[in-house]
Length: 409
Figure 1: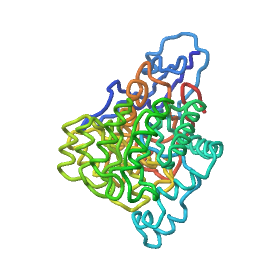
Figure 2 (figure 1 turned 90 degrees about the horizontal axis):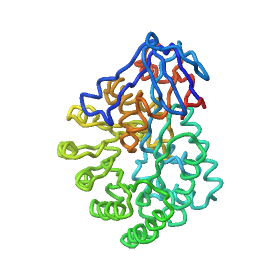
Figure 3 (figure 1 turned 90 degrees about the vertical axis):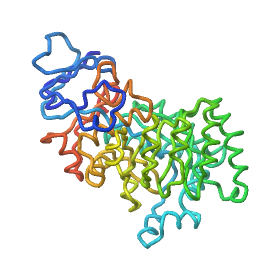
Figure 4 (figure 1 turned 180 degrees about the horizontal axis):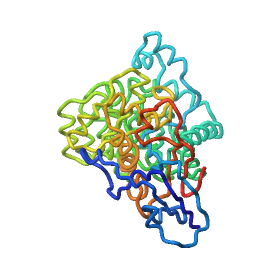
């Protein structure tokens, strides 16, 4: 079917590059008074209305009041989880830190206990509600991690739920195995046994059932050491899983060097960065990913995004949607917060949340920008003055419609 979108106020994010690096992120290419032709769920053509040739179309939609931009590409989420951690939110207000809550049995271990006790159908139902919500807020591609299971049975259950979501919704999903999210309490004094479980029992089953695209490790003080992270990255590679790592959220312990030297696709969080970490990132192809709504929610430092971009590095933005540190999948808020708190320009923030987010999921060829042959995933805005109004008016919903795979949802 040929679907023609006409009179677009401004078509935003025209780019055929696989990723934007450093100063390239300042450029956001657009066409005013544009058309967009969609055929069989893909971008067939686009350009100025004056260049549109007369032909037959199955459907025509007038978008004269809308800016149209690529759907968000959210490369870091944990949306498959059970229940919530509302009480921990109150505990932090009352003065407890994230680490103190974890040490009292809260945090990741709290979520793991709830998930282990929740059957697969209920877990799918809760997760589907969250996925539908983020789709309505403009997310067209998303990475979802396991990591709230921490047993073989529960980790596989999470990954099966992710697979079902992928099969049942018109949003592109990448799955990440994050069994190394925390050491379960019963393995406290025998952590090597848990790492053996991850490598010798979980990974083979996950690979055999084709349940994951990536492996992740929470490389952080109190969680997994650099040596343990390297061991797990190497094990994942043997099963065809590239690495996407949690690093430098609270402390800098050398995780970035390990990530770059072992070919990790991305390093995520980066709230604490040393000059040598930034220098190390310039020596490899690992993509830094910032999670500003996590910093907002936990009142911790923001990723020094300006330093990364000024070092001629790429930067992606993602939500970190999870029950403990970021109970929100709103990429619109992420883009606004990156501008307000991290001093990104609107152009840089939109590029970081689209084309660079796609790159952090290896989706550059199909998602994240306006280019012929890419998937027709778009946000149609309400009648706003410019794309800069999206982060400026951060508290309002400026999305009129979302299109995924060529269909309005």
